[in-house]
Image (cartoon, rainbow, N blue to C red; front, side):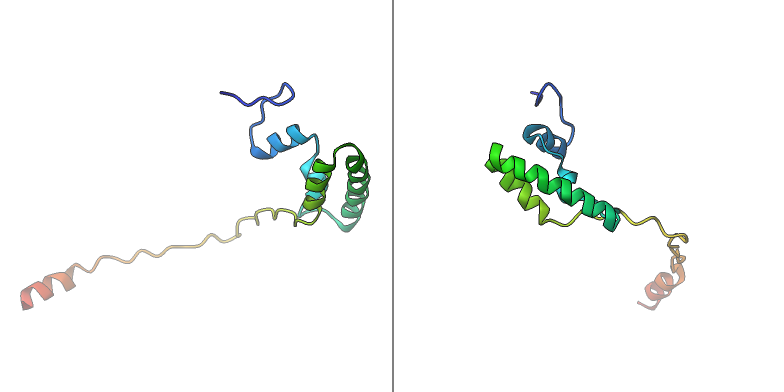
Amino acid sequence: MKTIVAGREPVTPTEFIELALGIDLELFTGSAAESALERAARLDVAHEVLADLRVSDPETAAYAESLLRTLPLKTLRPASRHPRRTVRRPAKTGAVASSAAAA
């Protein structure tokens, strides 16, 4: 059975929450790559939306307010310029043969 919210089929749990609650999660959680100016602007808008939500939907407002207290997700660091090298050591076949001969 497919889950359809507001005529759309969410692919991820985050999309499901955004469609079901009608709020943008990134507005309240932010991005790890945002600048201080972008963060200040985002928080201004988030607080305005939160004030409207407190009047219209207190339960969703409480959830959104809890999101404001979370840290933004860290983006993955770019791969190192020098990939890690693995060293393969040749198997010691002589050691096995000499221990068998000694026995």
